[in-house]
Length: 290
Image (cartoon, rainbow, N blue to C red; front, side, top):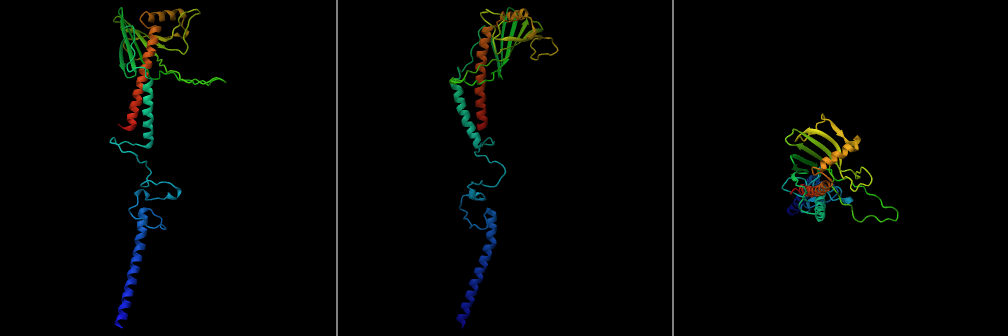
């Protein structure tokens, strides 16, 4: 009799413990599922799973989830600079590496070409000044290589004609300003010059035409970099050819002629290419944050 009562009590105790355990499991399980973003129908995953499997709402569609749900873009690479680094930045850097190598291959020289005629050079980034004195006249030529490469126009080959294999060489042809000062005068005669697309010729049978042209002429304060709009400016578009020729001869007598213009374009092309490579290197360093 006593054994029967003990057996009954033992069975009742095991049933009570089983019910409590099941109840606790049902209570804790939703909390765990909620914390791990696991659907209620799925079995509980052990914590030894990779953490990126958490919150896997798109696993069925083949989408690999992020570590945590976030609206921001997480950087793919850490860097001491504290900036953002993405896979796009990495690809950009690789492209720039290749571009720099190719540009250095076609670079004609590490140093800038020399200008003949006794010109002294002053460089300030993309701006260049060429200065010389001749019989008391001080001549200063100033130009900037920014936006000095004419836009390239790709012409489609005619029917039956093969396309050109080699791309045309880029040549820098900047506008330039010539300032002529007589002795210690306070005024300077200033010429605004440019390289026209077509060579300029003033008559038939001329052996050599001018490769640069004067656009405007004006008297300005000597050494003043700003062109005062209140000073009278002579536009050469409607100028008598005889006066224009005398102005060109005036420049040629002071070393600004076709030879000078040729050398200026060669120098400007080398300077522009040098600055372009430097820009690519700076851009590469900025993207990599090095």
